[in-house]
Image (cartoon, rainbow, N blue to C red):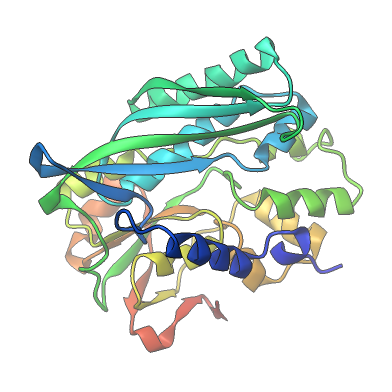
Length: 324
């Protein structure tokens, strides 16, 4: 079987239609197309609040299979903090939401360890949250949260400054992060593999999938030291996320080398190259669009690599020889 994200149960086109239907009914405020919403403060005319909410998704099912819960809290923090970075904001604080099938103090404690570590890495506080016991709604556990940050109005990175000829700076991912796990699970289970089988000499398949999402703290120095025209967190829908920051096209002529987990999944699931880049981060978990004059400083600050450039809208989105 040639697996796709849609066959696994996640159709990103239908998901977009759901978002449109929901947004159409929301009129009390301006719905942001960026990775974080921005809110004006009545008592501060110089700053905006940046707010993002997200969850860990079906990565919790891998945690449940391995009975290993101490890292998904990092993922929860990362998914939100990275989105706050995308508007040029500094993350400030976080609240979590944990829904459990039944009370389990040990699991709660392990999840808390990950949340605390994620907060430490991103230098934010966790000021509260909510726990719900929902035996008829969830199986095992669901984990999500909300991050709040701040940014000066004149420092917001909206993508409006992006122009043809700008360079795309790619930052390496740690692996699959927290997206595409539904497809990954279907591939592994469909191939008759067990999550405890070895993936490498150091870890099992399940442990590889649980590798925490990177928190890209280096972008703070990047947008505080360099001119940055756009920032994208490469999550669900993969490289298509670049289209969220501009209507212009992209030529990713030198993509970063995918992590071994992606080659493994593609081979086991007979997944096409296009489907891989439309589903996973493929080794690039974060991207920054910068003017060409910032190339040297930006690569030095982040350790990233130039992977492509912005092109005319009509040229669309290309990754190597692929047109997504």
